Image (cartoon, rainbow, N blue to C red; front, side, top):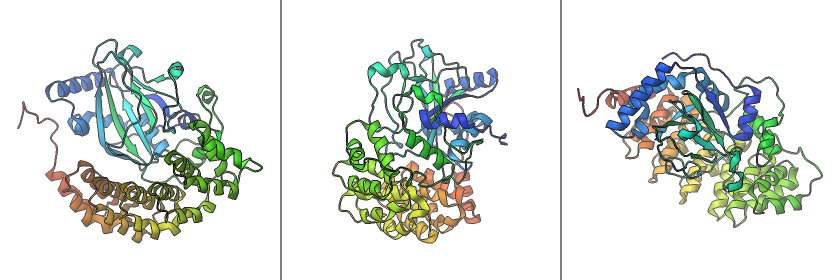
Length: 466
Protein backbone atom coordinates (compact mmCIF):
# COMPACT_ATOMS: atom_id res chain seq x y z
CA UNK A 1 0.00 0.00 0.00
CA UNK A 2 1.47 3.36 -1.01
CA UNK A 3 1.91 5.79 1.87
CA UNK A 4 1.22 9.45 1.13
CA UNK A 5 3.73 12.13 2.03
CA UNK A 6 3.74 12.69 5.76
CA UNK A 7 2.27 15.82 7.31
CA UNK A 8 5.05 16.64 9.76
CA UNK A 9 4.49 18.46 13.02
CA UNK A 10 5.45 22.11 13.33
CA UNK A 11 7.83 23.55 15.94
CA UNK A 12 4.82 24.76 17.90
CA UNK A 13 3.24 21.30 17.92
CA UNK A 14 6.52 19.65 18.95
CA UNK A 15 6.91 22.09 21.82
CA UNK A 16 3.38 21.30 22.94
CA UNK A 17 4.06 17.57 22.76
CA UNK A 18 7.27 17.93 24.79
CA UNK A 19 5.59 19.94 27.52
CA UNK A 20 2.11 18.41 27.64
CA UNK A 21 2.94 14.86 26.53
CA UNK A 22 0.15 14.62 23.95
CA UNK A 23 -1.39 16.10 20.80
CA UNK A 24 -4.99 15.73 19.64
CA UNK A 25 -5.11 15.57 15.83
CA UNK A 26 -7.53 14.43 13.12
CA UNK A 27 -7.60 12.45 9.90
CA UNK A 28 -9.79 13.42 6.96
CA UNK A 29 -11.33 10.08 5.99
CA UNK A 30 -14.84 10.14 4.60
CA UNK A 31 -17.85 9.37 6.81
CA UNK A 32 -18.34 6.23 4.69
CA UNK A 33 -14.87 4.96 5.68
CA UNK A 34 -15.68 5.21 9.37
CA UNK A 35 -19.16 3.75 8.92
CA UNK A 36 -17.63 0.68 7.28
CA UNK A 37 -14.93 0.51 9.94
CA UNK A 38 -17.51 0.63 12.71
CA UNK A 39 -19.60 -2.03 11.00
CA UNK A 40 -16.57 -4.31 10.86
CA UNK A 41 -15.62 -3.62 14.48
CA UNK A 42 -19.17 -4.25 15.70
CA UNK A 43 -19.28 -7.56 13.84
CA UNK A 44 -15.94 -8.76 15.18
CA UNK A 45 -16.68 -7.78 18.77
CA UNK A 46 -20.21 -9.22 18.74
CA UNK A 47 -19.37 -12.49 17.02
CA UNK A 48 -15.79 -13.16 18.15
CA UNK A 49 -14.96 -10.89 21.07
CA UNK A 50 -11.98 -8.58 21.39
CA UNK A 51 -9.29 -9.66 18.88
CA UNK A 52 -6.49 -8.31 21.10
CA UNK A 53 -3.12 -8.34 19.35
CA UNK A 54 -4.84 -9.55 16.18
CA UNK A 55 -6.80 -6.32 15.84
CA UNK A 56 -4.96 -5.23 12.69
CA UNK A 57 -5.10 -8.52 10.74
CA UNK A 58 -8.73 -8.99 11.78
CA UNK A 59 -9.60 -5.44 10.71
CA UNK A 60 -6.98 -4.75 8.01
CA UNK A 61 -8.73 -1.54 6.94
CA UNK A 62 -7.04 0.02 9.96
CA UNK A 63 -3.73 0.05 8.09
CA UNK A 64 -5.14 2.95 6.06
CA UNK A 65 -5.29 4.90 9.30
CA UNK A 66 -1.60 4.43 9.96
CA UNK A 67 -0.72 5.26 6.37
CA UNK A 68 -2.61 8.54 6.66
CA UNK A 69 -0.32 11.60 6.32
CA UNK A 70 -1.48 13.07 9.65
CA UNK A 71 -0.87 9.86 11.64
CA UNK A 72 2.33 8.86 9.85
CA UNK A 73 3.65 12.43 10.02
CA UNK A 74 2.96 12.78 13.74
CA UNK A 75 4.75 9.51 14.48
CA UNK A 76 7.69 10.35 12.22
CA UNK A 77 8.05 13.75 13.86
CA UNK A 78 8.30 12.29 17.36
CA UNK A 79 9.94 8.89 16.71
CA UNK A 80 11.94 9.36 13.52
CA UNK A 81 11.24 8.03 10.04
CA UNK A 82 12.18 4.41 10.82
CA UNK A 83 9.77 3.89 13.73
CA UNK A 84 8.30 0.48 14.54
CA UNK A 85 4.64 -0.46 15.10
CA UNK A 86 4.77 -2.77 18.09
CA UNK A 87 3.29 -6.27 18.16
CA UNK A 88 0.93 -5.31 20.99
CA UNK A 89 -2.24 -3.44 20.12
CA UNK A 90 -5.70 -3.37 21.65
CA UNK A 91 -9.19 -2.23 20.77
CA UNK A 92 -10.78 -0.68 23.85
CA UNK A 93 -14.56 -0.91 24.06
CA UNK A 94 -16.16 1.36 26.64
CA UNK A 95 -19.86 1.43 27.55
CA UNK A 96 -19.40 2.07 31.27
CA UNK A 97 -21.05 5.04 32.99
CA UNK A 98 -18.16 4.97 35.48
CA UNK A 99 -14.74 6.47 34.67
CA UNK A 100 -11.71 4.21 34.61
CA UNK A 101 -8.81 4.54 37.01
CA UNK A 102 -5.78 6.72 36.32
CA UNK A 103 -2.81 4.65 35.19
CA UNK A 104 0.31 4.37 33.07
CA UNK A 105 0.45 1.43 30.68
CA UNK A 106 2.81 -1.40 31.50
CA UNK A 107 4.92 -2.88 28.74
CA UNK A 108 2.62 -5.76 27.73
CA UNK A 109 2.34 -6.90 31.34
CA UNK A 110 6.06 -6.43 32.04
CA UNK A 111 8.10 -3.62 33.58
CA UNK A 112 10.98 -1.64 32.16
CA UNK A 113 12.78 1.61 32.96
CA UNK A 114 10.58 4.49 31.83
CA UNK A 115 12.31 7.18 29.81
CA UNK A 116 11.90 10.95 29.81
CA UNK A 117 13.04 10.94 26.18
CA UNK A 118 10.29 9.88 23.75
CA UNK A 119 11.57 6.48 22.65
CA UNK A 120 7.97 5.21 22.76
CA UNK A 121 4.59 6.69 21.84
CA UNK A 122 1.00 5.57 21.42
CA UNK A 123 -1.78 6.42 19.00
CA UNK A 124 -5.33 6.16 20.30
CA UNK A 125 -7.76 6.35 17.38
CA UNK A 126 -11.51 7.02 17.62
CA UNK A 127 -13.48 5.61 14.66
CA UNK A 128 -16.80 7.16 15.73
CA UNK A 129 -17.88 10.66 16.72
CA UNK A 130 -16.79 10.86 20.34
CA UNK A 131 -18.38 13.69 22.31
CA UNK A 132 -17.46 14.11 25.97
CA UNK A 133 -20.59 12.16 26.98
CA UNK A 134 -19.37 9.06 25.08
CA UNK A 135 -16.33 8.61 27.31
CA UNK A 136 -13.20 9.62 25.38
CA UNK A 137 -9.74 8.94 26.77
CA UNK A 138 -8.63 11.52 29.30
CA UNK A 139 -5.00 12.49 29.87
CA UNK A 140 -3.44 14.65 32.57
CA UNK A 141 -1.24 17.12 30.67
CA UNK A 142 2.45 17.21 31.54
CA UNK A 143 2.49 14.06 33.67
CA UNK A 144 4.47 11.82 31.31
CA UNK A 145 7.63 12.01 33.42
CA UNK A 146 6.12 11.43 36.87
CA UNK A 147 6.26 8.01 38.48
CA UNK A 148 3.72 9.12 41.08
CA UNK A 149 0.23 10.50 40.50
CA UNK A 150 1.03 14.03 41.63
CA UNK A 151 -2.33 15.60 40.77
CA UNK A 152 -5.22 15.79 43.22
CA UNK A 153 -8.97 15.62 42.82
CA UNK A 154 -9.31 19.41 42.86
CA UNK A 155 -6.92 19.61 39.92
CA UNK A 156 -8.94 17.30 37.70
CA UNK A 157 -10.35 20.22 35.71
CA UNK A 158 -7.02 20.27 33.88
CA UNK A 159 -7.75 16.84 32.37
CA UNK A 160 -7.64 16.89 28.55
CA UNK A 161 -10.25 14.82 26.69
CA UNK A 162 -9.65 13.27 23.27
CA UNK A 163 -13.14 14.09 22.08
CA UNK A 164 -14.01 14.97 18.52
CA UNK A 165 -15.44 13.74 15.24
CA UNK A 166 -14.77 10.29 13.84
CA UNK A 167 -11.13 10.17 12.79
CA UNK A 168 -9.81 12.04 15.82
CA UNK A 169 -6.69 10.56 17.35
CA UNK A 170 -4.45 11.40 20.26
CA UNK A 171 -0.69 10.95 20.07
CA UNK A 172 0.71 10.45 23.56
CA UNK A 173 4.07 9.97 25.22
CA UNK A 174 3.92 6.32 26.25
CA UNK A 175 4.20 7.08 29.97
CA UNK A 176 1.55 9.78 30.42
CA UNK A 177 -1.11 9.31 33.11
CA UNK A 178 -4.45 8.59 31.42
CA UNK A 179 -7.85 6.92 31.88
CA UNK A 180 -11.15 6.11 30.22
CA UNK A 181 -13.80 8.68 31.09
CA UNK A 182 -17.46 7.91 31.80
CA UNK A 183 -19.67 6.89 28.89
CA UNK A 184 -22.97 8.41 30.02
CA UNK A 185 -24.66 7.79 26.66
CA UNK A 186 -24.29 4.03 26.90
CA UNK A 187 -23.60 3.73 23.19
CA UNK A 188 -20.64 1.71 21.86
CA UNK A 189 -17.36 3.62 22.05
CA UNK A 190 -14.21 2.20 20.49
CA UNK A 191 -10.68 3.45 21.07
CA UNK A 192 -8.07 1.64 19.00
CA UNK A 193 -4.68 1.69 20.74
CA UNK A 194 -1.43 1.04 18.87
CA UNK A 195 2.10 1.37 20.25
CA UNK A 196 5.21 2.58 18.45
CA UNK A 197 8.94 2.54 19.18
CA UNK A 198 11.83 4.63 17.92
CA UNK A 199 14.46 2.34 16.34
CA UNK A 200 17.08 5.03 15.73
CA UNK A 201 18.42 7.67 18.07
CA UNK A 202 17.79 11.16 16.69
CA UNK A 203 20.62 12.81 14.80
CA UNK A 204 18.58 15.78 13.52
CA UNK A 205 15.00 17.08 13.86
CA UNK A 206 12.49 14.78 12.17
CA UNK A 207 9.64 17.31 12.23
CA UNK A 208 9.19 20.51 10.19
CA UNK A 209 11.83 22.37 12.18
CA UNK A 210 12.45 26.06 11.52
CA UNK A 211 13.80 27.39 14.84
CA UNK A 212 16.72 25.53 16.39
CA UNK A 213 16.32 27.12 19.83
CA UNK A 214 13.92 25.99 22.54
CA UNK A 215 11.05 28.36 23.27
CA UNK A 216 8.59 27.47 26.01
CA UNK A 217 5.06 27.58 24.54
CA UNK A 218 2.46 29.76 26.20
CA UNK A 219 0.23 26.69 26.57
CA UNK A 220 2.74 25.27 29.07
CA UNK A 221 1.73 27.97 31.55
CA UNK A 222 -1.46 26.00 32.21
CA UNK A 223 0.41 22.92 33.40
CA UNK A 224 0.52 21.92 37.04
CA UNK A 225 4.32 22.22 37.12
CA UNK A 226 7.08 23.81 35.03
CA UNK A 227 10.21 21.96 33.86
CA UNK A 228 12.29 24.36 31.79
CA UNK A 229 15.58 22.44 31.87
CA UNK A 230 13.98 19.08 31.13
CA UNK A 231 11.89 20.48 28.28
CA UNK A 232 14.85 22.20 26.67
CA UNK A 233 17.00 19.09 27.04
CA UNK A 234 14.31 16.96 25.38
CA UNK A 235 14.06 19.43 22.48
CA UNK A 236 17.84 19.31 22.07
CA UNK A 237 17.85 15.50 22.29
CA UNK A 238 15.21 15.26 19.58
CA UNK A 239 17.42 17.59 17.51
CA UNK A 240 20.33 15.14 17.78
CA UNK A 241 22.29 16.61 20.69
CA UNK A 242 23.66 14.47 23.54
CA UNK A 243 24.44 15.98 26.93
CA UNK A 244 23.36 19.46 25.84
CA UNK A 245 22.85 20.61 29.45
CA UNK A 246 26.40 19.82 30.56
CA UNK A 247 28.20 22.78 32.19
CA UNK A 248 25.46 25.28 31.28
CA UNK A 249 24.73 26.47 34.85
CA UNK A 250 27.13 28.12 37.26
CA UNK A 251 27.02 29.43 40.82
CA UNK A 252 24.17 27.15 41.89
CA UNK A 253 23.63 25.87 45.40
CA UNK A 254 24.52 22.21 45.00
CA UNK A 255 23.59 21.33 48.57
CA UNK A 256 20.14 22.88 48.28
CA UNK A 257 19.49 21.20 44.93
CA UNK A 258 20.54 17.84 46.40
CA UNK A 259 18.11 18.28 49.28
CA UNK A 260 15.31 19.13 46.86
CA UNK A 261 16.09 16.11 44.70
CA UNK A 262 15.74 13.86 47.74
CA UNK A 263 12.46 15.46 48.81
CA UNK A 264 8.96 14.06 48.53
CA UNK A 265 7.66 16.40 45.81
CA UNK A 266 8.54 14.68 42.54
CA UNK A 267 8.19 17.66 40.15
CA UNK A 268 10.57 19.76 42.26
CA UNK A 269 12.92 16.78 42.57
CA UNK A 270 13.00 16.38 38.78
CA UNK A 271 13.86 20.05 38.31
CA UNK A 272 16.68 19.78 40.85
CA UNK A 273 17.97 16.66 39.09
CA UNK A 274 18.26 18.41 35.73
CA UNK A 275 19.78 21.52 37.29
CA UNK A 276 22.44 19.36 38.92
CA UNK A 277 23.11 17.73 35.53
CA UNK A 278 23.77 21.20 34.15
CA UNK A 279 26.10 22.21 36.99
CA UNK A 280 29.37 20.61 35.93
CA UNK A 281 31.52 18.29 38.01
CA UNK A 282 30.05 19.36 41.35
CA UNK A 283 26.56 18.57 40.10
CA UNK A 284 27.70 15.20 38.75
CA UNK A 285 29.32 14.38 42.10
CA UNK A 286 26.01 15.06 43.85
CA UNK A 287 24.10 12.93 41.34
CA UNK A 288 26.55 10.05 41.72
CA UNK A 289 26.12 10.14 45.49
CA UNK A 290 22.35 10.00 45.01
CA UNK A 291 22.69 7.17 42.50
CA UNK A 292 24.11 5.00 45.29
CA UNK A 293 21.20 5.79 47.61
CA UNK A 294 19.35 2.91 49.24
CA UNK A 295 16.06 4.52 48.17
CA UNK A 296 15.14 3.40 44.64
CA UNK A 297 13.26 6.61 43.77
CA UNK A 298 16.32 8.76 44.57
CA UNK A 299 18.67 6.44 42.71
CA UNK A 300 16.35 6.47 39.70
CA UNK A 301 16.11 10.27 39.66
CA UNK A 302 19.89 10.51 39.79
CA UNK A 303 20.10 8.22 36.78
CA UNK A 304 17.90 10.59 34.79
CA UNK A 305 20.24 13.43 35.66
CA UNK A 306 23.39 11.49 34.85
CA UNK A 307 21.88 10.35 31.54
CA UNK A 308 21.92 13.96 30.31
CA UNK A 309 25.07 15.19 32.10
CA UNK A 310 27.46 14.47 29.25
CA UNK A 311 30.77 12.66 28.94
CA UNK A 312 32.05 13.68 32.39
CA UNK A 313 29.46 11.39 33.98
CA UNK A 314 30.79 8.25 32.28
CA UNK A 315 33.67 7.25 34.64
CA UNK A 316 31.43 7.30 37.72
CA UNK A 317 28.74 5.35 35.88
CA UNK A 318 31.26 2.70 34.87
CA UNK A 319 32.27 2.37 38.50
CA UNK A 320 28.61 2.08 39.51
CA UNK A 321 28.25 -0.99 37.28
CA UNK A 322 30.42 -2.79 39.86
CA UNK A 323 28.01 -2.02 42.72
CA UNK A 324 26.47 -4.79 44.80
CA UNK A 325 23.07 -3.03 44.64
CA UNK A 326 20.85 -4.20 41.81
CA UNK A 327 19.09 -0.87 41.40
CA UNK A 328 22.38 1.05 41.21
CA UNK A 329 23.72 -1.23 38.47
CA UNK A 330 20.50 -1.04 36.44
CA UNK A 331 20.16 2.74 36.73
CA UNK A 332 23.82 3.24 35.82
CA UNK A 333 23.33 1.04 32.75
CA UNK A 334 20.29 3.10 31.78
CA UNK A 335 22.23 6.37 31.99
CA UNK A 336 25.12 4.95 29.95
CA UNK A 337 22.72 3.84 27.23
CA UNK A 338 21.26 7.34 26.99
CA UNK A 339 24.77 8.77 26.58
CA UNK A 340 25.22 6.44 23.59
CA UNK A 341 28.51 6.99 21.76
CA UNK A 342 29.95 8.94 24.68
CA UNK A 343 29.75 5.71 26.71
CA UNK A 344 31.27 3.22 24.25
CA UNK A 345 33.87 2.26 26.88
CA UNK A 346 31.04 0.67 28.88
CA UNK A 347 30.37 -2.06 26.31
CA UNK A 348 32.53 -4.83 27.90
CA UNK A 349 30.89 -4.38 31.31
CA UNK A 350 27.40 -4.12 29.85
CA UNK A 351 27.95 -7.33 27.89
CA UNK A 352 28.76 -9.16 31.11
CA UNK A 353 25.50 -7.91 32.63
CA UNK A 354 23.43 -9.75 30.00
CA UNK A 355 23.87 -12.83 32.22
CA UNK A 356 23.28 -11.01 35.51
CA UNK A 357 20.97 -12.82 38.01
CA UNK A 358 18.58 -9.82 38.09
CA UNK A 359 16.15 -9.53 35.18
CA UNK A 360 15.97 -5.77 35.76
CA UNK A 361 19.72 -5.48 35.29
CA UNK A 362 19.76 -7.83 32.27
CA UNK A 363 17.02 -6.04 30.42
CA UNK A 364 18.32 -2.55 31.15
CA UNK A 365 21.80 -3.59 30.02
CA UNK A 366 20.38 -5.01 26.78
CA UNK A 367 18.61 -1.72 26.05
CA UNK A 368 21.81 0.19 26.78
CA UNK A 369 23.84 -2.05 24.48
CA UNK A 370 21.40 -1.44 21.65
CA UNK A 371 21.74 2.33 22.11
CA UNK A 372 25.55 2.45 22.35
CA UNK A 373 25.95 -0.16 19.56
CA UNK A 374 29.72 0.11 19.11
CA UNK A 375 31.69 -2.10 18.68
CA UNK A 376 28.82 -3.64 16.73
CA UNK A 377 30.11 -7.21 16.57
CA UNK A 378 30.44 -7.37 20.35
CA UNK A 379 27.04 -5.72 20.88
CA UNK A 380 25.22 -8.12 18.55
CA UNK A 381 26.91 -11.11 20.19
CA UNK A 382 25.63 -9.93 23.57
CA UNK A 383 22.08 -9.59 22.26
CA UNK A 384 22.25 -13.08 20.73
CA UNK A 385 23.15 -14.29 24.21
CA UNK A 386 20.09 -12.49 25.51
CA UNK A 387 17.88 -14.34 23.02
CA UNK A 388 18.92 -17.60 24.71
CA UNK A 389 18.10 -16.53 28.27
CA UNK A 390 15.61 -18.50 30.34
CA UNK A 391 13.68 -15.33 31.19
CA UNK A 392 10.96 -14.40 28.70
CA UNK A 393 11.37 -10.65 29.10
CA UNK A 394 15.12 -10.91 28.51
CA UNK A 395 14.51 -12.85 25.32
CA UNK A 396 11.97 -10.43 23.87
CA UNK A 397 13.98 -7.39 24.98
CA UNK A 398 16.98 -8.77 23.10
CA UNK A 399 14.85 -9.36 20.00
CA UNK A 400 13.46 -5.84 20.09
CA UNK A 401 16.94 -4.41 20.66
CA UNK A 402 18.21 -6.09 17.49
CA UNK A 403 15.78 -3.97 15.46
CA UNK A 404 18.11 -1.02 16.07
CA UNK A 405 21.07 -2.55 14.19
CA UNK A 406 19.68 -3.13 10.70
CA UNK A 407 21.84 -5.30 8.46
CA UNK A 408 24.72 -5.08 10.95
CA UNK A 409 22.85 -7.68 13.03
CA UNK A 410 22.98 -10.31 10.28
CA UNK A 411 24.85 -12.67 12.62
CA UNK A 412 21.67 -12.91 14.71
CA UNK A 413 19.45 -14.19 11.88
CA UNK A 414 19.73 -17.91 12.64
CA UNK A 415 19.05 -17.24 16.32
CA UNK A 416 16.01 -15.12 15.48
CA UNK A 417 14.77 -18.02 13.34
CA UNK A 418 14.72 -20.16 16.48
CA UNK A 419 12.97 -17.36 18.36
CA UNK A 420 10.09 -17.60 15.87
CA UNK A 421 9.22 -20.90 17.59
CA UNK A 422 9.29 -19.46 21.13
CA UNK A 423 6.36 -20.09 23.47
CA UNK A 424 5.95 -16.36 24.13
CA UNK A 425 4.07 -14.15 21.64
CA UNK A 426 6.36 -11.16 22.15
CA UNK A 427 9.55 -13.14 21.65
CA UNK A 428 8.05 -14.28 18.35
CA UNK A 429 6.73 -10.84 17.45
CA UNK A 430 10.01 -9.09 18.18
CA UNK A 431 11.91 -11.71 16.19
CA UNK A 432 9.66 -10.96 13.20
CA UNK A 433 10.37 -7.24 13.56
CA UNK A 434 14.11 -7.77 13.97
CA UNK A 435 14.30 -9.89 10.82
CA UNK A 436 12.38 -7.20 8.97
CA UNK A 437 14.76 -4.47 10.09
CA UNK A 438 17.88 -6.57 9.42
CA UNK A 439 16.54 -7.04 5.88
CA UNK A 440 19.41 -9.13 4.48
CA UNK A 441 18.65 -11.90 2.00
CA UNK A 442 18.93 -14.53 4.73
CA UNK A 443 16.65 -12.55 7.05
CA UNK A 444 14.04 -11.96 4.33
CA UNK A 445 13.91 -15.66 3.37
CA UNK A 446 13.28 -16.76 6.96
CA UNK A 447 10.76 -13.99 7.49
CA UNK A 448 8.80 -14.69 4.30
CA UNK A 449 8.71 -18.43 5.00
CA UNK A 450 7.40 -17.77 8.49
CA UNK A 451 4.76 -15.27 7.35
CA UNK A 452 3.54 -17.56 4.57
CA UNK A 453 3.15 -20.42 7.04
CA UNK A 454 1.35 -18.26 9.60
CA UNK A 455 -0.66 -16.29 7.04
CA UNK A 456 -3.81 -14.76 8.49
CA UNK A 457 -7.02 -14.72 6.45
CA UNK A 458 -9.09 -11.72 7.63
CA UNK A 459 -12.37 -13.08 6.26
CA UNK A 460 -12.12 -16.57 7.73
CA UNK A 461 -14.16 -16.91 10.91
CA UNK A 462 -16.24 -19.57 12.74
CA UNK A 463 -19.22 -18.85 10.50
CA UNK A 464 -17.19 -18.99 7.27
CA UNK A 465 -14.25 -21.38 7.52
CA UNK A 466 -13.39 -21.69 3.81
